[in-house]
Image (cartoon, rainbow, N blue to C red; front, side, top):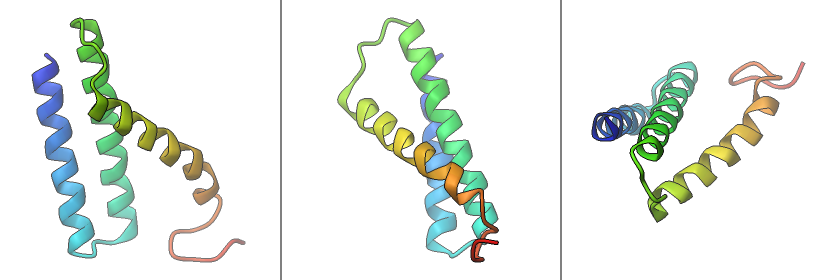
Length: 85
């Protein structure tokens, strides 16, 4: 189960990186970033249920997610590409 979730996360991350490299619209990049976070959370949950000890790469990924989530509420207060109302 965790292997499938890990593959989903890697695929989501690859799609996000591709979109960023090719300057996709901000709304698309934001949606792909959300998919990466959701896939990472699913991978973590499946791994823990399967008896994982939390590996270092996952700890750092979860720390990055936490930082993104702390910034996200403020970014939702203004339109993408615009200035605060």
